[in-house]
Structures are given as C-alpha cells and as structure tokens.
Image (cartoon, rainbow, N blue to C red; front, side, top):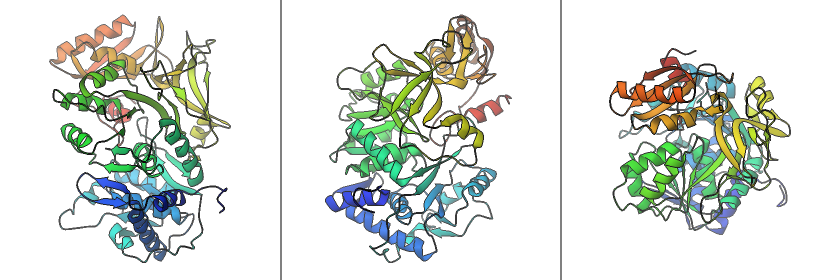
Length: 496
C-alpha cells in the first residue's frame, strides 16, 4: 500500500502513534491509562495472538467483552490482520446470539479474563453451546508482537448491529478504508483536535461509542476517556468535570438524566462539542441542558449504515436545522399519499448520498433494496428543509400519524404528552406502522397517579384528532444503545 492508496484503520492510528507516542490515548475512569505507543504495542501483541490461533484475512472474530483499553486494541489488531469482528451484545437471548453467529460465522470467540474478582460478568452474554472456541483476551495479549512486515489490509473490519429499536438488529458491515475516510470527514466537520478530551459513556459494542468517541479521538490524536456505561448520572457528572471533558455524544434521554442529577451551580461549559443524535431532540431538552448544565447541545444526524450526514456545528446561537457534512449530498423525497407532504418538496423522506458508506446489511435483501439504492441511501426518516437550506429531522416514517392538520410524528406527540406534567415518559406506538393512519397506542409512565396520566394523554390525542388507547407502564424497555425498545414494548402491550 502506497501513501496515496487506501488507508487501513490500524495504519491510520499507527501514524498518530508515531507522531504522538507518549501522549495519552485512553484513560479509564476506574483506573488504567495507555499512551499511543503503548496502545499500538498491545494491538501488535494481540494481533500476534490471533495469528497464532489461525485468524487470517477475511475471517470473523466474535467479541464477548466488557469495554476497556484491551477492547480497543483488539479492534486494531483484528483490523491489522484483515479480519473483522462482531460483538455478541449483552441483550442477546441465546436464540439471538445463535442467529448472530450464523450470520457472521466467526472462527474464534474472544472473552474477558475469568479472574477471581470478576467471574460473573462474561456470563451476562448468552453464548450458544455450538459457539466457536473461546480464548480470553489476556492470553492473546501475551503473544509475541506481529512482525512489522505484515501487509496492510483495507477490507471489512467489523459487523455491528443496528439499534434493534424496530426488530432484531441487522448486521451492518464496514470496510476499513471507507470507514477511515468517513471518520476523517466527520472529525474535520466537528473540528476535533489533539488537545480534546473525548468522554465516552457507551458500551463499545455499538457504533455510538466507536464512531463518535473511540475513533474520533484516536484518529485525531485526542485523549479518550472510557466511563462505566452503568454509572449513575451523578457519577458521570463528577467525571465529566474531573477529566475536563471537551467532547461527548449522548441521546436526549442521557442529557435529561444529567440535568436531573445536577446540583445548583453545575457547569459543563468546558464541553465545546456536546453532541446529540440517534433520537428526536426536543427544544425542551436543549433549553434545559443549557440552563441546568451550561451545555450547548449540537444536534447531529447519521446512522450505523451511512455514517454521519448532518450537524449543527456553526458558532454562535444554535441554528434552525442541520447542515450537511462535507461531500454528503442531501435531498427530500415526497411522501406519496400523505396530505401536506406529497407534492411539497421541502418535507418528506430524507435521502443521502456519499462515496463512503457501509457495505449494507447481512442477508437482508429486502432491506438492502429499500435502503441502498445506488448511489443513494434512503434513510426511512422524515425531514423538513428550511428556507436557508438546512434540515430538521422529524422522526421515522413509520412513526407518522395522520391528523386533520397533516402528519404528526410520534416523538413530537410524546413530547406534548410529557409536557402536561402528569407523565414522566410517553411512547406513542402507531397501530399500523408506516400505513399513515390515525390510530395509536400510547404507553405512559405516570409521574403521579395513573388516572391523571391517562387523562392527560387522552386529551392530547383528542386535540390532534387521533384515536387509540393509553396504557400505563412501570418502566420503558431500552435497547443496547439506550433507545426505546419498541418491539419489546409492543409485545408487552399485546401489539403484533
């Protein structure tokens, strides 16, 4: 591979390590750090351990690991060999884990060390009896480093899972060279620098962690702080201050939890890039984060399949909408049959175009045909183009409900119901997803009495001319990335 050719992930991080060998690459909030040279040295030893066990270019390696420095090094090691990895999510049932292994056919399963102090954590994952041979990560790390003359690889380096918020997660494959190119564009758009401290509170099994935190930090030479994904918000607040974080990304719900836990005088204004994507971001959350935490949330939009497409990175007051990332094309496709959208080119389905996207879904021909329409990516999300050419994300097309005034998206309806003060959390589930009807079931987690919450929710439905029922719930199920697990909630409430 010449300097002008495609760039592999391992080589891209190696270049940063050569330039900043002693700079801190990763710091864990529960102890432990690694400089850039140290991280690459660990990756080289793990690559040697994988090679000793027969892992070759094109092979798949399954991960059943907690996050940490070794996890990141293992990703780099797998990429260096030209192999790819797939995580077994903690939320997988045994049948789901079995299906994940069938789709990806790994040759090896890497697990956490079974130490006396922590022997139960790996058992949180459902590992089928016919899974491939398992090897603890620490054994791989004790091998001789892989020789420096190993050829560079740029093929597929991972298969990650979609959020699972609409059904069993889809496996999504990315090549190293397109991933590095896409990440570099995003780093340039967000202006992440080697002086930044990138704070990650997410499990490393998902793209929210790797794409917006791990490799945004490592490809820019910044310092990555890995926090415990299960830490309570008050602890995360303390850590954000202690480690002087300047960059983070989280879902709207996470920012709400931080605001709830904040003491008077809490100030996170040092976070210059407080990013939020992956779910509807309401003006109320943005306002509360500013008033309670001193944060200006910058909304972003993208997907595990496409990468990042839109963002609000302009200095000064928050803009009305999102601007495309460099070299990302954007257009609006009208929604056929939806009053107020068909024939109106400024509101409809968001359609994207880029020369560096994923390779698509594993064994999902129908989903690939609907989503990847070369050269375009059809997002399945509804958006509005503003007069100045920016974009506002309205929600999933399957969440659109028909009202006399036109489409209302379920997240907007949820926000209105929660704003009544009687409902702590609302989730509106269209009874006919994607069919654009006016029937909905609303799950509510009451703030006080069930009667008050139900009455408030029904009043909002009547105001919009919607029909359906309201069901109280004690808790709202979440996916691995923290989104509402709508399939589980629908099943719990008797919807098929």
